[in-house]
Each structure stands twice: as C-alpha cells, then as structure tokens.
Image (cartoon, rainbow, N blue to C red; front, side):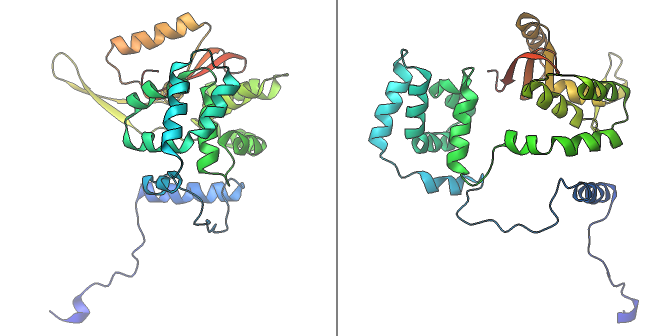
Length: 266
C-alpha cells in the first residue's frame, strides 16, 4: 500500500448532534453572561468533591468528636443553636463518617439532617469544605435578572410561558417563590430527549417520549396541603416507581407555604 492512498485525519475534534448541541449551548451561555469566557485557575487549597481531598480535613480530636456526637444524638433537650454549635465542632468527624457509609446510615446517625432546619447543617458542612465558594442560593440570586431575559427569548411551551408571565406580574413574592418558579422554568430550556419503551399485554412495543411537563413534575411536586402531597408520594411508591430526589412544595410554586426536599425516602 502506498502512503498517498492512506487517508489523513485532518480533524480529531468530536462530531455529532450531541457535541454540536453542547457547544452551541455553551456559546449561548457565554453570550448572555451565564458562563465566563475566561479560564479560571482554581487554588489547589480549595477542596473539590473528590473523596481523596475530603481527607484534608480529617485531623481533629476524634475522642472529643465522639463525645460531642453522643450528646447530639442522645440529648433530646438541645436547642437548635446548641445543635449548630456541636455540628460545627464535629464537622471533620462527620465528613469521615459520610465518606465511609451509605446514605441510609448517614441519615440514621446524623438524624438532624432530616429536620426542618437541616438545610442549615448542610450549609455548615458546605462552607467548611468549600470556604472560598458561595452557596448556590447566593449565586442563583445574582443571576435572576439574566435568567428572566433568557426565559423571555427561549421559553416556547404554553404552560411555561403562562407561568413566566405570572412570575413577572406577581407582587410581593417571597424568595422561595421566585427561586422555585425559576428552577421549574429551567426545564423548558433543557428540553428532555429521553424515551421509554414499554410492552403491553400483547407484547407490542410502544415508545413514550418525555415532555417538558414530565421533567418539571419529577423535579418539583406541588400540592395544596401536606396530606395531598403525602398521598402523591404514597401513590408513586405503590406503583413501584423509583422516586428520584426532588423538591416538595405545599401551596403553589409562586406562593409556597412549605418547601421540603425528598431524598432517599426521607
């Protein structure tokens, strides 16, 4: 075989619809300011989510942490400020436990994660591990006006357009109402492409394509009362459906009375 007959690969860049969609999306995000065009060089002292780097913090007095953890678990008369104080003092011991155990064991031992104010404890752990980063609620709030502009340009489905209009026209919305509605509307930008193949009684195959509404309703479950919300969860369980982590809202998206996170049957 002559060398001239061998085809030369002039371009090794990835090709295809998925890659093209990814690069186009990244370009649009840069154009509207949601993604920086400058390369960010992270300080090596900043922790990532890898388990190896979690070891960096595991150097506190373990015996003292065990004693405080026992107080946290067994003393039911602790006030919430006292719980937060102990939580800060045992953060390294807890991170080691999280690294070595599954979700069920973590919630069983550190049961305060599942309490109504448990999100504050998650924030304590996050700020300890990533002290140079802002939490999501702060960064998300900074981008609300930019997101509204994107929604105006790109939201096409009628249900989301109606909700967007209600968001812009509603007065005296609480922060949770704004954030929930914006998160809900994000699903109208990232249109689901997943499909599900089912078999009927006769063995005939049928393909179900998931809609924007399907995506929204698996991410946030909304019901007027807590009782109705519990009925929805129990119905999903009875159908042997796998319930992914999601947000539970009592009231409505724009005017939530209570916001909970459903995770691992908690």
